Image 1 (tube, one colour):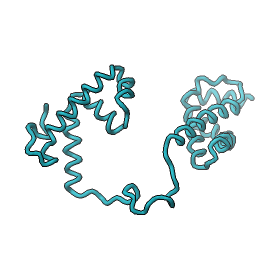
Image 2 (cartoon, helix red, strand yellow; image 1 turned 180 degrees about the vertical axis):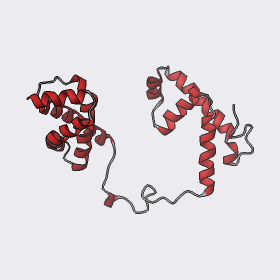
Image 3 (tube, rainbow, N blue to C red; image 1 turned 90 degrees about the horizontal axis):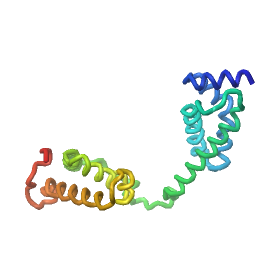
Image 4 (cartoon, helix red, strand yellow; image 1 turned 90 degrees about the vertical axis):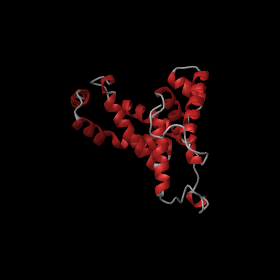
Length: 192
């Protein structure tokens, strides 16, 4: 028990060897808990890694002198459940069931024109006002809805919609030439 107290104190002090020792002693237990919940070795490995990372980050909450096993098993269980929930939201199917012509499976490297277009669009987004740029990034890169963006930014949904409208209008003007609608009124790289 004295060794566990010393290990807990070393863990609190940020000693990396303490994390390794903790993993050596309890890695099997954590993996078993995760595997029992997830039923997949790859996800159980991920849960094991996350468990020890969380244990290290939250080592100040562990009371020296107590047994590590229940504490780590609880963290592993919660982590595995989080991974399980994440995987349920993610649509998954067998690779063998996928259509061989599916664009998600086969993609050719981008040509020079595609690379240039991507660069021009990114540069145009960078030159938006910061509030508008955040909305565009959250909407198109992160995939959030207007309501979710409003919650993340702490603003009203109407504010998000108006920022999105203004941003898209500016981008449409700046990038009209890419659609073949004529020359843009502002250069793609110029400031607003």
